[in-house]
Length: 417
Length: 92
Image: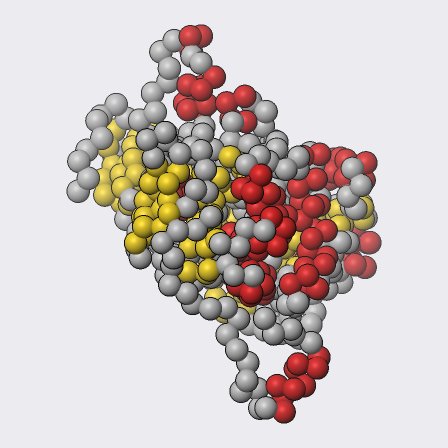
């Protein structure tokens, strides 16, 4: 792997930038691997990277039905934060934020992680009470989060309209200064480049069509569009399609897949200094380094695999943004799209072993999986390599829906449900 | 936005309806006798079908009645709507 640095940039500049090599190989799938990851998004690609780096499993493959990072990794709004209410969630997401902080150096690839702060606005008395509870719970758990008055919100994010005569006036906000954004493509490309350098085979355009199990019920390997691949360990990291893949092994999942929409505006000069989220009025906005306003909308009401949604969902979010930031009323929107998110009944993810020996699953990230990418990948790799969960992801088991030990973050999740 | 054919009111915009999840999930007849696994299956496990999906809808801003509908989740095309209590029709 060529090491990237200022010097390498300079050297390639003298060569007219003609000498850059592809970041990863395009190998033919081998007939057998020690482990196979199904799904080449950030979570799956990252899991392969940590399997190779921390657990010494190098004879592994990532199978991706489309192109790397073309699913939800390329469709989210890149918000990173860890201000969750319950200790289990705060530990999980904070593990991730800590990995984000050193990810660019670790991967020698600029993930453009920017800790510009995530400001969650409160618009009702209920919001104020809930957010203050979050602030206190987070601080007690060692996760940074602080309460801002409306004037302090305005000082931190000047474009905000904090006047009292709007439909949902800003009554304050919870600010996590360590939160921010990262470049979505860079994360999966960085993991892919580093994993490939350690011998991980990245196989794109190779959908899994079946999971073969032996007489004892354990996993034998996966059927793919490019033939059978033998593997004693299969990790499924397939986001919205998890139910479909797990059904190949005969498992029903506590998941439903919904379209979640997002959109971006035309690029404008740097104007919006942080990430602003408002669960109550459904507005999620930040500005990309390209200058586009990146806007998250809500989920559609019904389950779907179409990767698109209805216009009333996005216009609802734009209504809210036009009131919250009136100067964006003349901003034109460039693109909108949908991603398919797999939601669990308690809105917390599942990173776990399954009843099928050799089959592992990382799913249920719902509307907020991007922020967890490094942490999720790291813990999933641990679960696959050791055949038991890491203490951080042990509570995020599949059997919590039988035992009733939910991690019920519904009220804390980014999108109001 | 979906144009949903309510069996009682005819085609109406999606905003008048509330989604009710997977259809044809029968309540347990003897809840006290149910194991934890059976409860989990009834309450939380779903087919999450990629393809033709039978689902409940309620015309909450109309006749307020529940009904069932077949929709292809790969295209969002609605195949047919039918009344609660009727058997699932053959996919068209």
